[in-house]
Length: 442
Image 1 (spheres, helix red, strand yellow):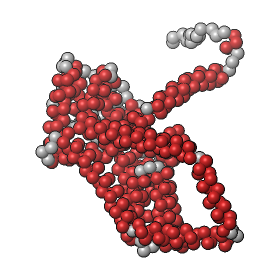
Image 2 (cartoon, rainbow, N blue to C red):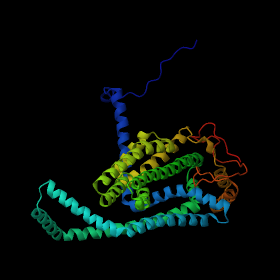
Image 3 (tube, rainbow, N blue to C red):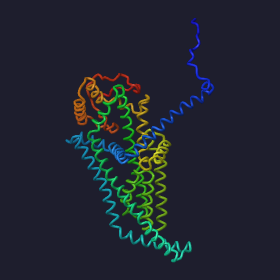
């Protein structure tokens, strides 16, 4: 029987260190590392805030690309259009739909504008009469309040002018953001695969395959989020439009539906603003009783959508608990306002799916391994020039889209296809590869 030997002791600690309990020393070691992580995250957020005019449109283009990517694949497969032409057609169709929404809503509202104006004046006069009778406010007090308001307006004319100028600057940033978003969207749809392959080529060989496969899982979760958000917005808009029909205001149902649908993509503020517009419209057209009924309808629909429908569907789509969805939206709004609330859940869903794959828990094992990337990496391993390898991969991607059924859950930057097996320079078992995954074959 071998003789047991005591475990070797580590280097002796200084007396003042040895006197500190081991739990306190470990807590201190964790604390300063967490402080460094928090400081790095804060510095990153500060840097992003300085270029938010560029970052926000690009993130918005990513969300729209996730929505339009299946359409582009269908156009590429069933028509004579190439990837670039299909992307342009999809973008043009999206712009036409958005412009049509605003045009239809605007025309119907303008057609009824005179009626709305007359009833709004009548409603304001009724409100003034009710306020003077209920709160014992005489005409003198109302006149003095109006005069005071005019005086304050004259005194703060300079401040209002500066606000107008700042508003013009904001509008300029909005126009710039729209241009950046459209350009980014086009290149993501038409050449996203090439851009992503270029990024993959910059990584160390051991990290290329796991990074690509983890991002494919994240893209699938992001696509599911976009589709679910569209469904939630449609349900919210339909509920409020049904309320308008029930109140006998069917002529305004379509504009309200379109308005609520568009505003539902703006978290928190969009739902409140669209609901307030619906209630005010009913107030000036049907009076207090109709407005109260409409308010109940709006609150009921928004409670159903916000507390039941959205957390349940969104949690299933992005594989997150409803509590994580709720806290993520709240945290994003606290950190970055409306943009933070808009992009919080997509970012959390993407990161969650990506990290699950890297730690060995593949959230989408049906995706397997992308053979197109293996071909590209093999070309790099054989010493091919980057441009030649990129051209070969792009040609293969175009052929695949003409023959293979489109997979809406796969990222636009990760095309699928049937290729001949070629040895890959990366290790057979890359770090973070989920157990049991195999190369997908047609």
